[in-house]
Image (cartoon, one colour):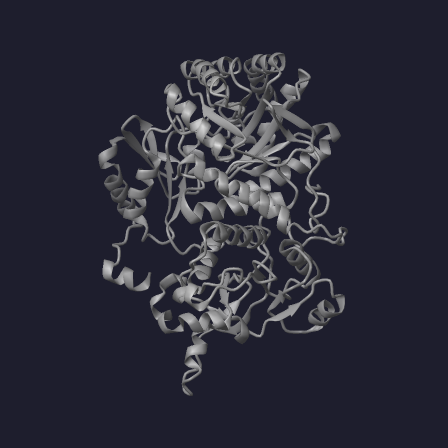
Length: 622
């Protein structure tokens, strides 16, 4: 199956155009940026104001939740108020569970988003074997519930998003395909076939997940299936990582998922989902699009090369281990009787963090106080061989050697990072471990004063580009299974570069060194203040290394997105919280004021609680 025309050369996937109000998506249009308001849909003035604020920030399409028929009916007043104020940004109704709400919303908006997993379908995590006849009967029932919406959208000339979420696949899909990218794709295609049977084609697909690896595999598989189905299945795609969370971690996770797909030419509209005020999403999304335009490789490369990875299923490249000098060896070298530390790289070893000697020298005096953010390997001491992957003679020489070598791509070559490493991994025998870099041509240096002993004084916009570039390039390759160590060299401040390195490994699921959070963005369905609640939970649990906690404002995607989380904190009713272990609810209707303490108790019950270090110790290693 083919998911892009050439994984070594950027070429945007060709799609048909779908009009969302006055905005074209797909075709020759630029990649569109969208977001979602967070207030109660019944609060008309707030809905209008938040929509205008998003439009003024550069948002091109705005989504509003419509959980009930009453909410859907109020979309008439919201859209009327927006048009009266001169705001013509297209409005999308976000529908879950209630076909009746979708039918009402479709009267007033430019697009309706439905989720196949819970639109006229069930999700009770019931194990049941469906016969072919039973499965077909379920599809007929769904067709009966879904076809009126298709006909209404066609009559009104409005668009639709068939948006599958990994966290809300139906029992029918889960029992036949499992909780897999294939299940996500088949769920969407079932609804698409119904729409096409009515000659309705104004729809857009999405395959969203909180795990970037799952999200990337699902979109690739969808594109491959659409290619197999024929040229008239050329529908646009909306990209997003659900429940990305907040702050730097959320931006990194979004860049890994969205950025890697954009780099392969996949995606026509995007949303960066942050547990922050919605306007904060827009600069990140716009920077991601701009980043791909600036870094994509337009030069022709060999396209008939067999890739080293399966694009539809993650597996780390099988290398052999190489022993290299660790960072502490540079400090120990001054002592004749101390050989210093060594690390194994490759095989099943942890993916290591590498720094340049100049950066190591700036932080060597405090390396024993850096905790989990310390550098592990100094580039100049690790006997790393840098080559141009297009140089077949150099690659052949390495492959002829009997012992595995630690290899990377040479700096300042005229290839995009992703294409260069894919080319290297395809040509180099798998036994050789690979060091990934975020950029080949280093950015302009900042002064020693600006570096301020590892604290960058860059403007936020400049660091955002550095972060997105590193996350897209390194994160994408890690999700391809390529890479045994990483070097962030686009960020000159050593402390910030180290933090970015470890956070990329965490977001890609390649190395867990701190608490992992899955937190949804706020919307009108949210039953508590997500930003303040997330802050409270982080303050109480940030020291729980390796524990994964999901924070969900409502039940829409909660249990599914929490499938690989250890614990979940989910809004059950106004002012009430349900606590989960995995995707099983174990504590119900806890008053919000008590819920964080009860979450801590639950973690203790399951043997995963440790007491935090004293504040003085934390400050010394921060």
